[in-house]
Length: 484
Image (cartoon, rainbow, N blue to C red; front, side, top):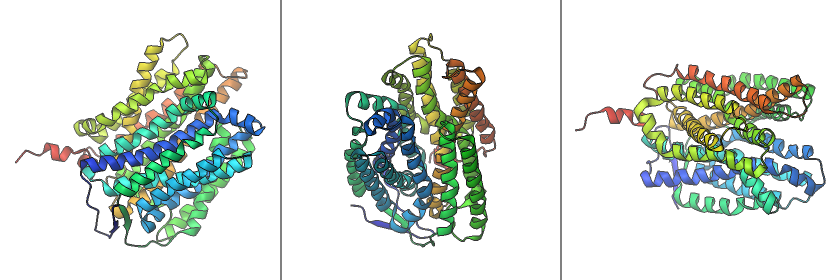
């Protein structure tokens, strides 16, 4: 088992050799895949679970919002915990908590029990995602950041895509409880491999825990996420959603005032002074709205607009996961050849273009053509987020990596949830305006074009990146120097 590595202000762990960093990236990727897959599988299985508990399918939405609220409360604390107890220890503990929550979910005799179990799962997931990324940032050399992030990004993109397919297969051919049982062997293997191959890096300096900041951020993020999710899905009245938004914004303003006075705030807003971090946050937020909308819009369009079954629609949307897998080997060469700025600008345009094409999908389109477009679109989107998740840390000092991952992951979760809210709201407005009860193809087109316009704005933000931003991460400086 690797020993603990304590980092001082100027110390950094020895970067593992290439094969070792790939192992580390795969361990982290496997844990993130488990977390992402679980979330999207559950959405598909909710009607079946509702029948099992004898409740309305609408009542099951609380299992989704409970998990998101747990994320909102605990993600900001993940960086402090990793610095205090070590990234590997916290990562393994997060997997263990997620497994415990999964086992409780599988054994749940009632809906209230399931909600409590989902909150426990959320606690594990809140630490697993940012701390897993932190493990990469603190143990992988800067020259290997792009390749490592490409491995880690794949599950984040594949999980939401194949979730509906796997969920449809499980509820069709197995008991819904297997949705949670499958996490147990995956989690156990992850803990064993992490204990063997990952260094337990932690910071020597001890930051005080920001209790009041956690309270303000939890109320703000929880209220905003709950408003996005319930409002976007039409599960809360406009008055309730509006009230939650007000509470979220007011408590957020209180947090900003508090953070300016606190020596070590739970979410470090001064990170936004770093140009590459700030631009990655802004452009990535715009792009993630479309990413959050995709798992919501595509399966629903295939089922309601194309008349496909849940399993069939999952098979169609699954093809974009293959595009994400293809990106894994291509990200580093592309970024080395064109640089972060050019890649992010033109790939933003390309990704937005594919979203616009999805708006034109119709049932009479040849399925192979749809497959091809989803495949290339999946590649483009995966490349975009690999670049964002790497360039964000180009100027972040190693001792601030924990704070940066907490901040970045918190905003990432907010924007993905906002994507669902935006797309669902446009869908509902289009349906209401036309006087129908259920959406048809033009309604889905309106939703896709809306998120397309938002995603396209990211290209203008990326144009403000310096031309040499992240060149050392992409290996461009090394490649440009003459041999000898």
